[in-house]
Every structure is written in structure tokens, then in C-alpha cells.
Length: 607
Image (cartoon, rainbow, N blue to C red; front, top):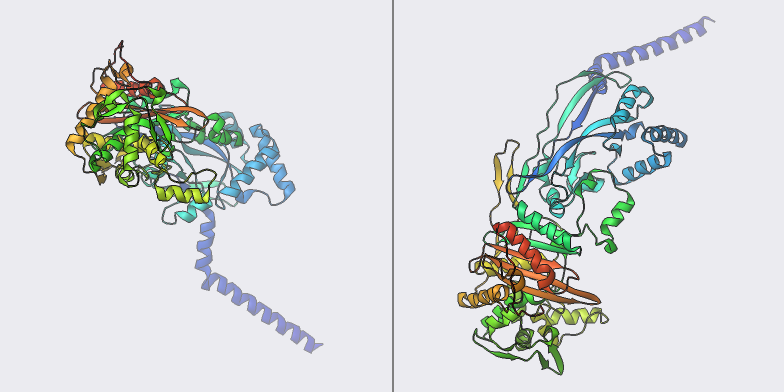
């Protein structure tokens, strides 16, 4: 019996010794470590996003600003793990928001699928005050729910410049992976399109943090020292508000898809750019339904989200003729005095090529051919330059067939057709492409066939024609400013090419374009004949398969030393003088603050 007591006593002493050394280790050896962890458990760090910088037009008028919104969010960590628990939670929250439990479940699922792990799940924004007060009073019943004050974008000018401004959205897991060098975290916002995307680093600012001490139930008991966020810089754009407003209003009044671009010919600054139909940028400050998303891309609805000004790829019709003329003059195929007898049609390689409406213009030199838009004259130039790269090279020099580099995403490269490209396309898709033949160079010479360009590319080319041969990169950002309005950075003109244009050749072309716009027999005299500012403009009517012709107008003003280039296109707009030219007139009236008067008479051609 005594041995048993001794054994049991020994075991007890060993256990006490182990317990003693364990307590000694916890309290003495690692006590500081666990004390620090315990303190950390009582301290929470809340990330405070910085207000995004504003976006302004060139005169300082605010295009995009911030407003505060009360957002109802779920903490993903607090969501029950059991199906029954989640369903009960969704039902309670749905009752508060006047939504079904299934609606809440879908919102949670979609957010978790797209956002980084741990991101707060935003169920609703701009929550009514009544709901905010109710949740505050019943916080104990909804520990999973948070109502946080967040910054969202607001648009004081409504729909103006929507395609330029772009939108923001919450960061996704993909965003975090693609931008490891940026200070991003779950729940932050990031520029997704337009200026918001290109200048996100400047606009986003630096987040701060708020540190609070909480008790064992998670309630805040005290505020600790915090770091204030640094607001983002404002971005001032080159956009002229009057030009932008006039162009958008005029396009919208027509009611057809289209676009316009206005550029400063001397520095590449974009004074106006828009696509129609447009959209309300404010819609992206709220969660979108699938029907809303579908409507933005629906082609039957005009695909409002598509920016035709930079992404549209079109044949540009007779607006391309000045560049054909320069290529032909440079190659020695004509001189300014070369005369062609325009009978209204011409037969080349057993194929007949006609003027619009087969209208005959009689003997025409280059200046007259531009004035009346003689297709026959330019058909002959396309014929004569076939078998060379003269036309393709000059088109490439003016920037056709490649992106301009404008500082918003989404622009197309267009297409300059060459025998090599066309024959390869025919080989790959013989159903859609014919092999190269002389007729294709003839069509290219009048901006038709497989040739494709965006309104922005055409405006960039006309700007280079206007300034004597300097190809400039279009730019929207004028400067960035801090919260106090101090300039932080300024954009400088970017030259992307220099074209050796003979000044005499340019002058003949400018004279022809001036006559086309303001001489009584010019193609757009009825539109620009009464405009007090001298201009040089060209109509274009581009054929599209199974559709009404597309209208174009390109104009430089004032003539002969232009400041501004304007390009307008209207899909299914018919003749360029009927729909596109009047939009360009409205833009120039706003720019020069001068009104045109009506004119009578004038012959003009059907273009």
C-alpha cells in the first residue's frame, strides 16, 4: 500500500512539475509574445480609402466629383458556415432591405466569385436613413452587417463626355494579381475604363487607417491614433466644354449612331470627343443588374458603351481624297495643273466606276476635283498607283492603320489594305475576302473597299495636313493638380511622325477643300457658305454592305492657317453634307462663338 502511495505521489509531483514549467514558460519565457498578440486581438485596423481626385475640363468646370454614400455591407468572416444559418441571415437582411433571401444569396455569391477573399460584400448603396437608424438600434441582432460611409463618383454635367471619363469599380482578385506594386486591398476601388483607368494612379490617392480598441464582443471601446488618407490628384482635361456640349447635342438630335472628334492641330489636344448613343456614367455607382449590362452592349440598342470615336472601324469615303492627292503629287503621277475630263464614269479593266449619281463634272484639275468631289479623278489616281506602295505608304505616314496612342483605352488600329494583306485574308477566309485586283486600289483611293479608320485617326490625319505635316499624338490630359489646385504635372505635345509635304501641294489641296466648303459649287456650300469663318472641309459618303450610306465630314478652320480639326460621322446618315456637315458646323460655331447665316443658291454635288 505504501509503495502505491509513493508511486501515485511521484506521478503527481511529475505532473505538477510539468504544469509548473509550462506556466513558467507561458508567463516568463513567452509572456511578452502572447501579451502582444492579446493586445493585437483587442486592436482593429480599418482601412480608410482616399477620396479620388476630380476630373475637370480645360476651364476648370467639374466633370467628375465625389459624394458620400451609406453602403450596407456584409462581413464575410461573420457569415454562418451552415446552410440553415446563412438562409436565416439572408432572410432577416432581406426583410430589412425589402428583398428576398434568394436575392441576398445571389449578391453574396456574385461578390465572392469576383472579389478577393475577405472583401466586404456590398448589398446596397445609398441606403435610406431609416434603414441606417434601424440597424444601428438593432446592432446586436445584425453583428454580420456593417453600414459604412464610402465615396462614390458624381457627375455634375450629367451624361457629358461619358465615354471619355470612364468608370471605377471594386478591385478584383485579378486586379490584385496584375498590380502587385500598387497599394491595393480588398474593398478598394480602381479605374476600370476611360480617364479613370489611364490616370488611376494619380486619381486614387493614398489610403489611411483608423485604429480602434474593441472588447471581447467586438464593440469599439476607444479610438487610437490614426493615419489620414491623402486625397488623389485632380486631372484637368483638354476638353472644351462648349465644343463637347455642342457636338454631343447635335449628334443626339439626329438620333443615329455616330461620333465626332475635335483636335487642336498644333499640339494634339483633344477639344471634344463623343460617341452616340451614350450612357449615364452614374449608373456605374450602383450595382448593375444583368439586364442593364446587356443593354449597354446590345447592338440593337446602338451598343451605348462602345466608343465609336476611337474604336469604330469604317470606310471614310471621300474625306480620304486629300491624302490620295498628296501621294499622287509626291509620286509624280499628277501635277496640280493636270486636267481630267470627268464624264461621270470611267471603265477600268472592264469594270465601270461611277461618280455618285453618275454626275459629270467636265474638265477638272486637282483643286476643282476636290471642290466638286470628282470620284473619276481619284479613280484614275488609284489606277495609276496600283502595283506600288505609294498610296499605302502615305496613308501609313498620316497614321492610318495603327493606333494613335490617345490616353484612353479601347481604340482600334484600323486597316490600310495592301496586296499582301488582302491575299492572305482571301487565303484564310475566301468567303469574305476577294484576292487583290486593281479595283481594290481604285476603291482605296476614295476611302472605300477594305480600308478602315476611326474618326480619331481621320482627325489626327487632318490635323497633320492642317499644320503642314507633323503627326501629333492625341491627348486628353492637360495637367494634374493637387487638392489645393497646384499643378503637379503637365502634358507636353508628342510628335509621332513628320511628313515631308510640299508646301505648294498642301496649298492646292487646302484651296480645293476651302472651295468644297464655301464656294457656290462646293459639296458643303449650303452648310458652310454662310459661316463667317473661312474653313476647308470635305464631305464623305461611304457605302456599307446592306446598310444606308454612312455620312462623313472633315474640316479645318480657320483657312488657310487652321487651329482646329473636326471630324464627324453618322452611321446610316446618307450624304455627308446632309447629316455630318451640320454637326461639324455646330461644333465650329461653339468654338469660334460665331453663327452661320443661311445661304441660297449653290450647285454642289450629291456628296
